[in-house]
Image 1 (cartoon, helix red, strand yellow):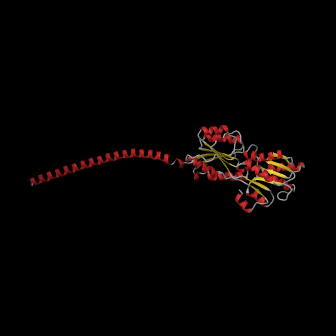
Image 2: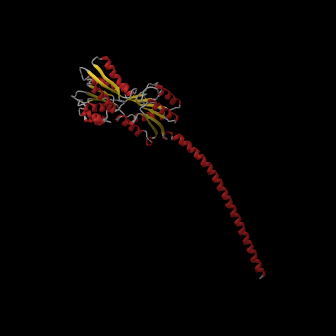
Image 3: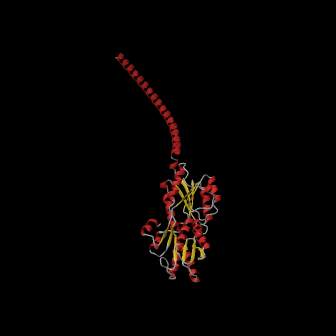
Length: 359
């Protein structure tokens, strides 16, 4: 019995010793695995950091063109005219986040306020500065600041009196040609005497300068061309109506109203209607406007006006094409893009013209 008990005790001790050894091995393995996992985690963190840095670098290198292009757009008041409303809508349609742009807009009819806004856009470090200038003068200094800051300047709608080296491109109407086309049309009417009420736009603007210049030259060169009055209504219909009403009240004779935009022509006609003075085709007074608002072309089609000069407000797609080229290192093929435009005569205009060219 004693031998049996002794044998059992030895077996129990051997079993306990084996279990203890297995426990130690398991603990050691677990410890080693934990150490290895920690080591792998450290390596993973290091690799993650390296990967993130590389990925960031790759993203910066490969998707720069995909980042939003920061654009500052300076325009005239959208409420100035139907033309300007269409122009502003076109710019907003193209220069939006969906098309890859971060665009900020500023509006004023005053040149000094626009120049101050341009300076602020330069300070904000926009990539491109797009300008439809209220006036032609005074832009050199801010454009030089933009150039020194690496900001590309693109003019639209209107030209300015500045060194062409200060802007990369301009997408504009030929305002002088608009005036020349209109004056040539008026000359073709063969009046014995031209007694003209000339209603001007904002003085100093490219549109005013161009549309005035051709008429001034014609009046200066021909004794039978007379300016009954020449005043600015600053594109405003109500002011134009007051100017014409003043001439009517004065008793001065006139047979032409040359208004430098459609809204002012509309105001002028309101004064004629109030005084029961006929106008348009077969009327006593020739009515001329500019911009080709759809409602103005309908006035031509109905024979209530005589002439309307086109001024194309849709420049945004041209500017977008220029910017995309510059982003890819391609300079524009031409620094100056002149939009094609025409004039419309009430005796030849069609409904198709109204539908196709009315804005």
